[in-house]
Length: 542
Image (tube, rainbow, N blue to C red; front, side, top):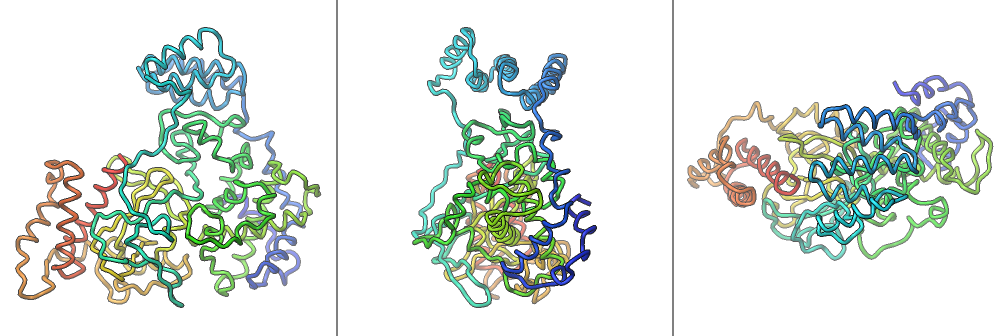
């Protein structure tokens, strides 16, 4: 159990019982909750947010020890230890020495570009450093100081004029029951790209912090550390500069993770990514002529289920306690530069930011996506993110599109034929093909709805319980050859005989034919949709 949950349990219902029991879901009620919680001395969180005791402090003694250990280590372990030494090295001669040593190791491995990167990071370059930089620039045929690692996925898509991250094949619809949703503006074929979006904000899972960039979430052999702490790494100076949120987390990352606040952490990053003066202008109220994933007003106006009456008093208090904890994090890091208040009392500016944090906590809770990565043959979760455009797509246990990701970038593809005016659907739980209805509903309930999609209403069987029958949509249609083609494509060695792009093209054509001629759901066709998704992962993200 996290320290935040322990505090919540200890202070619950100990004073002002009416506030603890109030289930009013409004800004006014939330202010009362935050003010009450801030009156508890334990809720100053001082003992948990002492930066001088952070495990991520720079430590030249530890850095030197790690560097010496690396010199005696096996080749495979050596670079990992040097990276750790880099993380703990304070800026100055110690850090320069680590960069020089790592550059020599990159050079030994013929990784000249990385060696050049490290030498360029040295602050006090000597004559030999400059000579080596010139030598490596010639080797790399690179005249720039540093090349920035970025996702290089090439795609072809004609974007929608209003829905800036979607293709022109998509349109926006709305209804009283379903809210905003997306429909096909024309027939969309299997394998067709329908969206290309970079996350507004993202969070890397803790276990990937030494292998992936904290900002772009891309795995990289080459990583540099934060200049203020040893807790996070970046793949480039560009990503380090872009991670404006980190100034509020520096030397506090471990404690934020120990608070175990889940996707709510994204709300902290949304707020801390901009100065307090920015939020004072209320930029999230601006009206736009298009739906842009980069606009804060787009993020602010995502679904929050506020005033729905479905959130109980204890949950509202836990949200308020988490928002207060984030306020203490911001205050400890110096975010409120011109505000002076006691350890418990909150200024008017802090209270306004607290309400904003609560709003974005709801936004991230109901609209976030997992960040996934293809690791070997498996797709693994490496973090979470907020994709304001893809968040428009509603749930079905039988989705017709799927995502592939490279760090913060998501590509969305149709996995079956989506007919004109048909709704485009995502899946917020495992699909009906994977798990039973009860298990799916346990997941979807957190999004404040009970799923009433066709598989749930009709009780469709899971993959294990489905027979491998191919039933024609039209009784007189002979689908024997189509059935043979599907079974061949699902055979173990079929994809090995083709290039990835050729296999994707063949499967896409067969799926289009299948959706026109075979009754749905069909086990073989669904397995082929899953194969298409895996191949799209390999083609775009390997």
